[in-house]
Length: 244
Length: 234
Ligand SMILES: Nc1ncnc2c1ncn2[C@@H]1O[C@H](COP(=O)(O)OP(=O)(O)OP(=O)(O)O)[C@@H](O)[C@H]1O
Ligand SMILES: [Mg+2]
Image (cartoon, each protein chain N blue to C red):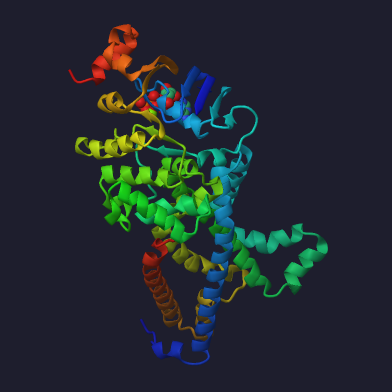
């Protein structure tokens, strides 16, 4: 579904991604972790062409990034993205947040867009918030709305960039539950997170990055069950983020 | 002080009529100047944010020039200098045959000056919208233009609403500078009344009062518009 082939990216002369090769199969959930600044956000932003890269290719289904020109918008409507700081549109109410892209990008009629939005509000458990403004919602509620906003375009892939790290601890689970539900339904997901419990329960594979390179890429049960086989850095990282 | 007060004077003809005409010119100058400023300022602000480096520099130059040169000097340049720089026939037309040459020139000067100020204000509003909002809109498949139309500009507009109101009050005050090139707006009319009657206190007092009333009225109007300006639908 998503194939990175030797992707290099730098800001100025500072390399941020180094020869990244990675395959995410349809329906797979891949968790990406690693220390701050290791390039996790950059990696997933490359998938929906929010970040350009210098060499290599990324294939998403039929579309190929990095070779000639590509309709970035056609790609983005197939790839949903959820941000660390939610990034709901603060001047629009919840319903408008969910309908904007459906109307402008997919050209759906207002009734059709609202129907889809209502179904998604039900699914994230926020049916009664349809006319709330984002500022009136808790962080966990905002992030669930943000997930619904991404799902409203019926994406084939969902990208999550530290979706729970801006949340108070008691709200983390309500967001992880929605994500777990999505994964169970077979959504293809790339998730940057340090929630190792989630990774252990939901991920098919765990990727560990350091300094822009993928250091570990292995099945979840190997990553957590057999840490002796991992690199020193990954082991040290794991011992920091895992509860003892 | 041996001064015969006569406040009734400003209510009598012909002076009351003069003041009314003055108010009309002041409002016309302000409204036309404002319209011109708005039309110019939005594209300049957008070019300053989105243009290539050269375009951004040019837009910044535009803002510096029109915002920083004193309005009275800009007024003189548009009136006395610019027509001389034009091709002969066009210059003559501007000076003599153009309808309302003083008024038109004053509108251009006032509008260009204000457009520099508004462009800067719009840019500060756009800059104040968090960066992640553009990414979020693009990630949903919106074009950059749509992202600005539906997400960035509405938020920027909310941020600058209060200073925008005071800019409009400023243009009303600044319109008085048009008297230097012969537009007989409110301040000029009050001067004329003082010339004719030597009742400067009453004439200027009346003009002052009228400016205050206009400002107060506009302020109330803006306050009323505010809530409805905040509601948007896609
Ligand atoms: N716009 C930019 N200009 C220059 N350098 C950047 C820019 N964005 C990111 N970087 C650098 O690229 C590197 C990778 O950044 P990235 O945000 O992908 O890391 P990350 O793994 O997501 O870190 P974090 O856990 O802090 O979110 C960092 O060293 C960062 O300083
Ligand atoms: Mg990051």
